[in-house]
Structures are given as C-alpha cells and as structure tokens.
Length: 215
Image (cartoon, rainbow, N blue to C red; front, side, top):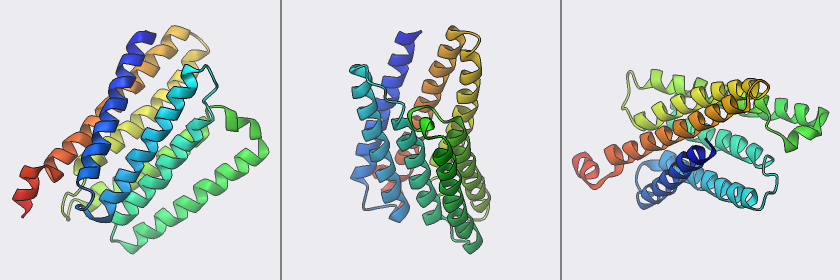
C-alpha cells in the first residue's frame, strides 16, 4: 500500500510541476488571476519538495502542513478575489481572510503543540471557506464568461474530497492502520485528478489552439 501511495503521489507532484511550467509559459495572458494561480502552483511545489526532502531524511515534516494549507488558503483567496467583480463577494473574502487567521491564531496561542501536528480544524476551516468561494464563482458563471471553469471544478472536488478523507483517515487510524493508508492513497489519487483538471484548463484556455480561437 505504501508503494502505491508513493507512486500516485509522485504522479501528482509531476503533474504539479508540469502545470507550473505550462502556466508560467502563459503568464502574460489570463490577467491577474492567472499570475496568482501560477504563484500558487510554485509555492505548493516548493513546499512539496521540501516536505519530500525532510521525509527522506526521516525528519518530522508535519509542520509544513500549515504552510501548505495556509499558503493554499492565501493564494486561492487572492485568486478568487481577482475573479470576483461583485463588491459584496470581495468583502466576504476579506472578512473570511481575517477571520480565518484570527481564529487559527487564537487556537495556536492556546495550544502551540499543534504547530508540529496535523491540525484537522485548520484543514476544515481553510477548505470550507475556499469551497464557499468556489460556490460563489459557480453562481457567477451562470451569467458570466466561464473563465477558469475547470480549475474551479478541480478546487471544489479536491477540497471537499480531501477534507472528508483527512477526517476519515484520522478516525480510521485509531481502528486500523491499513484503513488509514487507504484514505491516504485515495487522497493522493484525488490530488492527481485535481492536477488533471488544472491541465485541462490550460489546454482549453491557454494552449496555442485556444489562444488562436480567442483571437
């Protein structure tokens, strides 16, 4: 099971790298949202590489999960804010941003040991807020251009699915180590699917054929 997880996880990391290269090539198109999303891919890749390196040295890398989830929250919040034109929705993002960090700041101040563990509440809070933004964007696309449509689908599926899997994995770890491994494999597979949605978005929006069509 461990071999399968490593294989699927490495496929996900490879796709992440490919997507970063592809979006970097089209950095000049797609506006501010594309630039923010490209930086998001870069940040996540760097965190994954550092995490993998520490893991190879058998050094605890769980503290990096906070950089991953909070970094994801920051950049995807900025991504959606750049896409939203409704002033109320943009204000909601500002409120969500401040509220999230305030709540987590209080939690970590009360229990600093969480800095070196997986924080399920952090995962839930950041993912839940981003899912709300994703739903807002789906609503906006009913009457507007479907820009970053497949990325939004990928974000929704990945955040919703991975949040459930993290909670299930935490519960099953208490009952069966094997069941816990299955949830990790499922999460790695979900990440691959997420990256494939991102790749498909690039193909539909930023490939040479798509650009020529837009022109």
